Image (cartoon, rainbow over all chains, first blue to last red; front, side, top):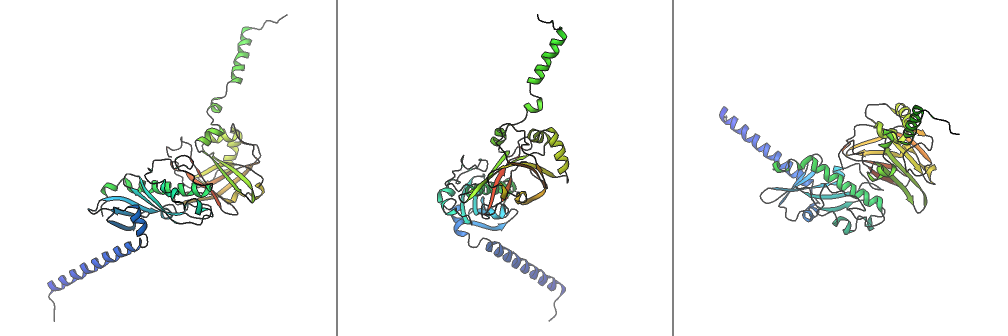
Length: 182
Length: 183
């Protein structure tokens, strides 16, 4: 069977379209895999969300959308945004949720090696005090952030990394958030 | 009997007395130790543990000539900053220390970060103590100047770490407001 030039062009077009679709599906699957395991944390931070993007951008973050694809916030890991920050024994990894007005939706502790973490940053009352805080707040332990315990290095480091990460994501992504559509 | 003093001489003595009693404009503009602390432009890092003696260190950014002269005095600032000057983006901090664990202190254990940039020690100069001329300073056992190299965003703080034997002790340093509006 011999194809005419027109048929050949058509087949080539279809193959190109099929390859592009496969690539898009693959990229989407890869991006979704970047947030695998984080779903319970994401849903806690943004219970009203209809969809979370994969981890993307610099600094890396996850975008949060409603049913009508409106961007309502960002979720980011402190070690992605501030990789050099550390507490007494190493990095303190927290997921931070922030809405498009620059207010924190919450903070979820993921991992740490702090010796006294169990009675400081692991306590729910440490994370709870960040809900509703603005990135313009001072985030100073002993002022607008309660030290919770005497593990001051750990608490100060965790507080500092939340503020720095949130302000950096806001600087990079919040100014353009209104135009930021999927 | 009182000797008559000519009016011109009396005026000269009066002017001299006023000049001696009035602080110089530079000194008048110098922040005190407490001013810098309140502004978070004087960082206090304390290392203490129930099993070890304490070590306390303070940092002040002294690259700006005004703050450098207020911290070190004009003569020392001019000579020391020349000695430590190197690359264009070189940043000097004065560090003062005290505490019974001072023998464990090593300048090389200090480093600094800002966002994704890390700054290791690029130079240091031990100073005789007492050196700093800041009003209200505590008693200090040792002082030094340390230098870091690289671009810094003065609108944002840096985190200075002392990498201790048992763990790292960080502290956040905010540059004086005259360098950036941050915080």
